[in-house]
Image (cartoon, rainbow, N blue to C red; front, side, top):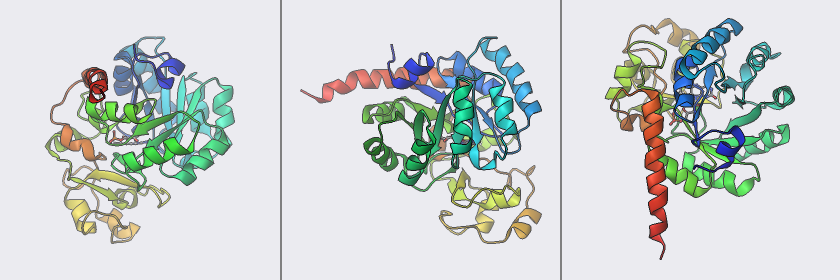
Length: 321
Ligand SMILES: Cc1cc2nc3c(=O)[nH]c(=O)nc-3n(C[C@H](O)[C@H](O)[C@H](O)COP(=O)(O)O)c2cc1C
């Protein structure tokens, strides 16, 4: 019934991709999103290994069946010669996201494998870079997104990107309900990535304190910060900070909303960090944290976002005479 570039191209029921979330979205979460009718992405962070990919494949096949379509999200800036990409392509994925960095050195390899290649982008300059690299579609990822992202909010960025490209455009950042999905589809997006809204699901991986912290958090309880990259020696290019829940640790190194770099150099910050302590440990999450107040299975979250969006889009015609 849904009919967008995304559903047609991937042959899926819903215009929803489970966002790749390094450290949180493995095979179990991705499998549930896929089983619900979207396509779940496994988030392969910089520190992921080919062995980890193999383990996640076993998990996703258990969750979504032997023939389940596979999708992965990689962090382009960290790919080097591309060993991790090769491990991903060996699994014959349907879709690969190459985000955060120029995908040009890798796009051909992905296309030759037969996978659809998309990139999350944060500015018009990023759009021009990934267009030149030959990606199949772009994702306008706004600043309200959880995890690493840019500085322009989803709605302004989406409007700017839609106006500037012939490529199919998806939206990410702040889409946590049917209202959000309906809004970006009505604007012209061909689908959406959902991340934070899935993070209270039992299928996520990560530290035990992450789900309770998210359930507790409101929409104002996030910060755009480099402090956890410093703490964990993750050499992210500084144009991408990450959006995380505020806690004692972020308050210690930031005044205000974290729009600028954290105080303290990498050595100081790292020496003070204990990732096992809930008051300090990182929980990357976006501003839709305020919408996440129950720990529901991912399958249920995806199904309810889709059915609510459908109802809203059917009703929206009524705003015109
Ligand atoms: C915990 C977490 C980890 C993330 N890790 C990655 C990643 O490894 N690669 C990537 O392309 N995007 C990553 N993202 C960004 C998501 O792909 C997506 O853009 C974002 O979750 C969408 O916004 P939302 O959180 O408001 O739904 C991450 C997001 C979160 C919340």
